[in-house]
Image 1 (cartoon, rainbow, N blue to C red):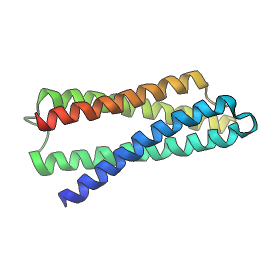
Image 2 (image 1 turned 120 degrees about the horizontal axis):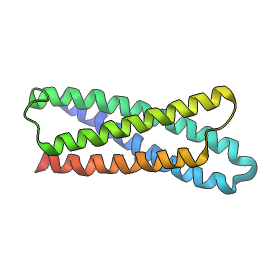
Image 3 (image 1 turned 135 degrees about the vertical axis):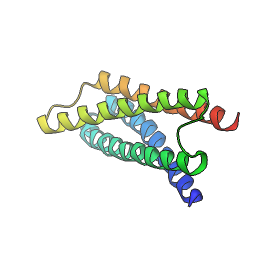
Length: 140
C-alpha cells in the first residue's frame, strides 16, 4: 500500500509542477497568439484545475504516508515543518488562482494577466522549494 501511495504522490507532483510550467508557457504564448489566445486561456484553466486536483491528492497521500511511516505529525524535523510552510503557501496560492479563474469565467471577464502571472510564478517557486526541502527533510 505504501508503494501505491508514493506512486500517486509522485505522479500528482508531476502533474502539479508540469501543469504550472505548461501554464506559464501558455501564458507567454498568449502574448503573441492573437486569435488563438482564447484557446490558450482555456488550456490554462484546464491545467489549473488538474494542478489543483494534484495538490489535493498530494495532501491526502502525504498525510496518509506520514501516519503510515512515522505514526503522525509528532517528532518531525524542523525541515519537515519548513516544507509544510511551503506546501501551505502553495495550496493558498493555488486556491487563490482557482478562485480568480472561476470568478472570471462566471463574469466573462478574464482575470488580470499580471496577477495570474505573479501567482503562477509564486506557485512554481513554492513547489520547487517544497521539493528541495522535502529532500533535505527526508534524507538528512
